[in-house]
Length: 515
Image (tube, rainbow, N blue to C red):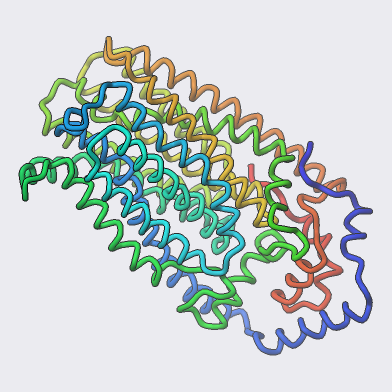
């Protein structure tokens, strides 16, 4: 396995250092211990206060994700009120406007996450990116031809790419592996809520704004939603947290406990070595075969979930009118949101990943089979709930990515972005799956069912890889990542343990990948 793992001899070499320097490092650690010493009861109180503040501030990610989704997908609602006719777009040109967004989205994710991992104020970066995509979305309302819409859609994807992988990286820098899945689920509630209500929000604007100040309703849709995004972006700069060592609004004790929690989680401080270089994380990610397996598996999952973009159309097969169809499209996503939160909480509690990914996929498969097998209205509506519920495994998969590439953070940043960026090809492919409308989209359901089967096989293969690595770590044959001396020293300082550098190897042998 090309897993960027060193042998015992290589580890010893990376920890060699001048004895005088080691003594200095130990003195620094002892000084920090005197400054931050706290009894267990105080530690519990500080950690509780830390997580309460952190959860409150990170909750803004949910609202940002809602706006991210609305600004990306409002073109579909705008099409219903004359966008395609006003811009003189044929079907292929409209499809190009949809797919070009993913070109910019895919191109920018890895560079963006590499940059976020190296800056001290990621909150400012996220807020600036949000301000820009809100501006670009607003400008979509002033275009008059195919070229203008293609350009705005490309740049919209380009700047929106900073958000999701960046938010996942920031969360992974604050929350331990026992907490991360639940927080990811809260983040993805933004996506699920958007699925539930985006059509209704669009319908409200499109039904009441046509002709206002002499402009078509679809232009107002871009202006209103883009303006709301820019307003939220300004507040994000003051609310979102930065990094555990420098975040504003936290006490010195809380910042120290935040760093200590991450060091205790896997036995090493969540920081990069000074000699790693700007492209170090990228090089480590490119030679890790696990990433490529997850890329293919996750892309299959995204194709299987492609029904979400066509959910109102699938609901329409039940035979109701326009407004009832929109209203009936919301409850399955509300169910999915609640189910995902409970499922993610259980995944964190049990520290199990494979079945918490596969379980919701199997539920979705049952929904697909029902939709393929019957035209009964009640049965098909229940099937839509089951299909929406399959998103719960998607959320757990994201936390599986973070926990499978725990250190160094530069590699984790690239891994999250690479896997997420490549999976967007699934959205492109998925847009062509749902053209087969005959028999209630039976053939389309057959395709996504097959993709879910591929996803299950990929997850099982990934589980076997991690189980094998865990056995080798337990036997002392490998370490899960390469130890750098300056990172080991920083870990010692955070843990306030002068002997932590020497004990580093034992910490790493206690680490296990979550399966």
